[in-house]
Amino acid sequence: MKTLGASNNFLAIDSHYSRLDSSAVAIVSAPYEHTVSYGGGAGKGPKAIIDASAYVEFYDDEFNRELCFDIGIATMKPIAFGKAVHEKALAIIEKQVSALLDKGKFVVTLGGEHTISTAPIKAHFKKYPKMSVLHFDAHSDLRDQYEGTPYSHACFMSRVCEFMKPSNITQVGIRAQCKEEAEFIKKKGVNTFYASAIRRNVHGKNWQKSVVSTLSKDVYVTFDVDYFDPAIMPSTGTPEPDGFMYAETLDVFRELIASGRRIIGFDIVELAPEKKVHHPDLTTARLLYKMLNYAFAKK
Image (cartoon, rainbow, N blue to C red; front, side, top):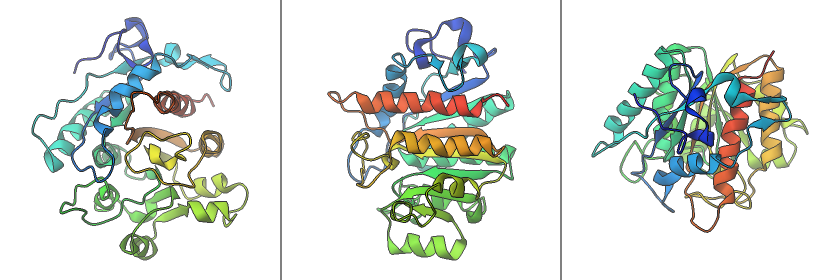
């Protein structure tokens, strides 16, 4: 497995801090886009995130550290899918993530459409069978099939439910779904925090604490950027109104760490960069680095 150099790796850091053998973190780029149903461009997301990361500051005032120099972050060369789609594409991703987990790396996977998340989730589940999945999204992605395929971005969480208990999944920010998905949630016991319920204070003012209370000790995070409000995240294929802001989202991670739980890995998907709108790319790159700071927070 080959890594990217300082001129085009995450944060544009020197090779001394981005070698795979000495880095605690490995970033996998999975620029897969095959089942777009509205706006396209998610396949360009990983590169846009990495390019924008060159403008993210190394220092984090909340943790008083420059994490990248403390732990090392290796950026893998993007996966080349060729003609592989559906199960074959997912198998390629899972193989690379599993290999990195076997090396003891903390793995971050960048998409691409949300379909790709099934692969890193499965790889982590094999290593952490008691883990929870914390799913940030505007959509529940629990359709059994969509537009003729069970491997659509709108179905990825249904595929996850085939190998782990739905009750170990917590969804946050959901505000667009079909009746089939709503019924699945009720029947199978998926912990779903709807955007409207959060806004109506159904879960109280500290809704973040309610979210975290549903999670096990080991938490894998899958983050679709359309969870954010289109005001701060217009660059995504299926934006939905009444989304969330950056600061209130970080409070979920703060509650998670304060509770003694830990982030064991994560993916970020569905950024569809636009040439003349740069702030969503930078927001996503900064989110990635901030999530790493929480994952490696000193006890």
